[in-house]
Amino acid sequence: MPHQGGASATLAPRPAARHDRQPPIPPKAIPHAATDLTPRLPAGFAAALIARLPAMRRYAMALSGNAALADDLVQDSIERALKAATGLRAPDNLPAWLRRIVRNLYLDEMRRGAVRGVKVDLDDMSNDMAISVAPPDHGAIPEIARAMAGLSVEHRQILVLSGVEELTYREIAAELDVPIGTVMSRLARARAALRDAMASPGAPERGP
Image 1 (cartoon, rainbow, N blue to C red):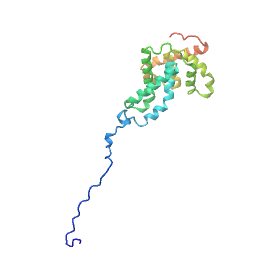
Image 2 (cartoon, rainbow, N blue to C red):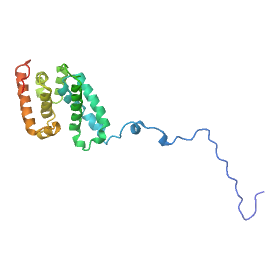
Image 3 (cartoon, one colour):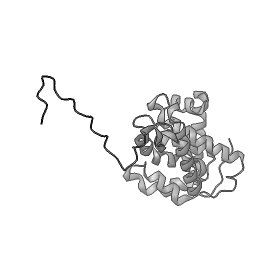
Image 4 (cartoon, one colour):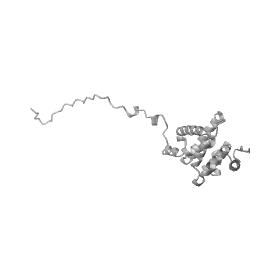
């Protein structure tokens, strides 16, 4: 019979339910590649980097004159940029920052002697220039590319910075760490060399 007293009956505690499965692994015990193996990228960095890839390849082609080497430079530059992404203080400086990485890697290749005797790839240079030249001028691209191929690396570089990337003298001076006067004289010599190369196909570039 049920207990009739004033005090309520004390219920015995229910036995704990038995679980056959193991307890879940704490979240901290699960490694996460995106946080454990690589630095956290700034917001929007990956998208901005992807958008700059054509310009990076143009610049790499201007420096190296060779499609295979340009592709290697861009690939290595992407890896270096991802590792150093947190060091980019001003997102607006991304284009110059990426070009500096490409240039430094190319200079490293030159110091190792890995780019000596590399043949300039005219077809690929033409294709890269076609991306930046207005449609009415596309017919002159192979001729310009052939003339550019005969120029020195220094002259190709400054022509791309001025004519393709459309940097000002001040911006070029800051990027190359040279006085503005040096930029102006170097660009004038590069343009003169390009005119000579286009007027006399196959002629070697004259010295400064």
